[in-house]
Length: 237
Image (cartoon, rainbow, N blue to C red; front, side, top):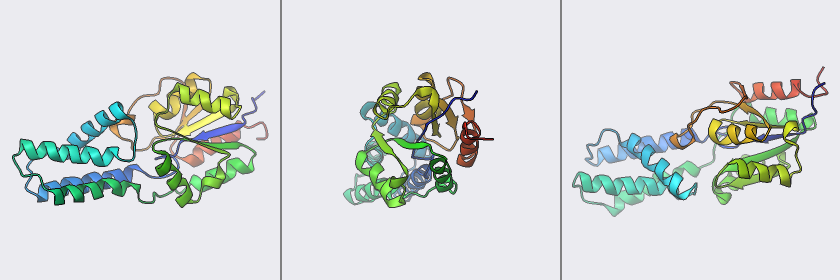
């Protein structure tokens, strides 16, 4: 007999809406700007990825982190290449860094997936990582805030955060699903608690890289994730 699964926990960035495409575009603009300003370093984007990952590990996820990583690297390269630091150029870099917070784009199957699961009686939760103000702005401007029974925003997503969500929303792990694009922060902590995980792989950044540590479904789209959830529902025939 199949267990009754009562809730689905979704990740936000690069699961329901695109984020990495905005960061990739900003990195390319940063690289082009420095090269047009006489910088000769070839692997600027790689250096930025390494520095930004280090900043995230030290200070967590914040709305200023990415832009600050760009400014720090600009200052470092100015010294190493003996190019005078320009406040005008720094302002342009800062503008590029904050451009990643422009309205993201929903993946084409996001709304259909949320509709199907809600209409089937599942409790829908959002558990996303980042700055409170920025993440709230994303769900509000995308018009999806009302789809969720509860929204949780944390600077990190670890075992402790999942335990808090389970307790606060009174969920039973064996009757709960989690859907996300990151094995390390979306799926692994959840499956350790007995939640059923579905990984929908998407492009991610260095900080989020990792392998699945337990059993989980791996599917190419949110539609496929919803299919699996509904086929395991007690109402499925």
